[in-house]
Length: 434
Ligand SMILES: Cc1cc2nc3c(=O)[nH]c(=O)nc-3n(C[C@H](O)[C@H](O)[C@H](O)COP(=O)(O)OP(=O)(O)OC[C@H]3O[C@@H](n4cnc5c(N)ncnc54)[C@H](O)[C@@H]3O)c2cc1C
Image: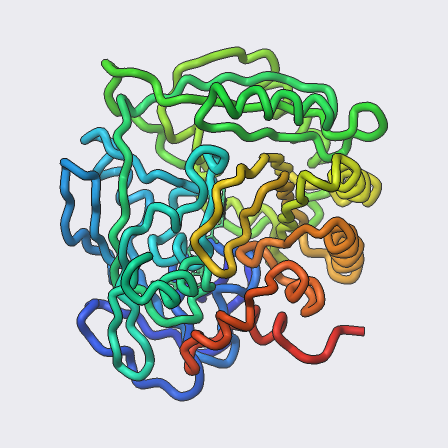
């Protein structure tokens, strides 16, 4: 079996037990355990170093679907890609999808993921109507906003710590076709982004921006704004391009500042002035899935993602400060994404999305230099009253976690005592790092 690792290439150290049947009891294991979906979390939120990972890939069955209501019941290891393949041709779509379709329903619930339509639809958990939780004492609870509501709220965004989601029921939405009207609008700086975003959120269901993270001064935060709406029929799901795969780890030297610059220039050139086009949903929602295992580009040492949300009420200074620190560091990133979150409350105790602007970027993991930058960025986020995203995190301090997630003690009370993660041990540790 291939080694189990997170997307940032942190290898699991400990046991792994595949699960096959939702009615089976949890396997008997020594010590702690944690469900593991497709490992699309970047850092250590999906790892339990020294414990046992419960691999949910085998829990991949659809259970029922009601075409009248769009309610789909499926096992926790079903991926959003599998839902799309089956239901998009029938005119149904998951209400919230992230930037990759290779995530499981259990993982999407546990991180209460967000998509390009957060301003309209809120988080994934807002569209989960029920789920079954299997706890280490052998009990099974069907939870919903009405049944065991406390446990439901703790499980949505609960980082896999309340037990195993064996199955869940989600509301899919109707789509008129498999196509998106996708418009690209270049913008010159971060102020222009906010204007464009505010205007587009009223006219477009999906909004997100790519930014050139090396631009500074007046051009700080320049980039391309993407917005889209589902296109009306008569289009049908068309031919899809087969993804290419990065066949092996590339040497670290490939990823230097020059290649990042070249990539940014190319990306900008390819998309600049593209105007409106009609595209299949895949390249619009999941552009990175076109290259499978693209995390190998970062070599064996892997990558880290920084993702924060900064509240609107502190103004634009915070976003400028974060972007400026990143540009100054020159450590670059293939991806820098900017998106505003709307005001719809998340159903989870520990959900990351909250009103504000979110910034997300990948960095090659280069030891102390990268850590120093992450500490500087964390300081800026803390100062602004923002939050870091556990799904992407590897280094958040307990102080930052306590400030951003004040309801964590409630989750701790409802946590399954046998379920733990490396992330949880780190961010709830009493000792602060030096
Ligand atoms: C290219 C890329 C783009 C991304 N874009 C976005 C984005 O736009 N928005 C966003 O919000 N996130 C995004 N993510 C992050 C990703 O959506 C989340 O990390 C997601 O939770 C990963 O799902 P997974 O199935 O791989 O779960 P894993 O990463 O394996 O696990 C995530 C968490 O879910 C728990 N878990 C998994 N299965 C179960 C289960 N059955 N029962 C209980 N707990 C379970 C695990 O214990 C862990 O805590 C992106 C990631 C990548 C790699």
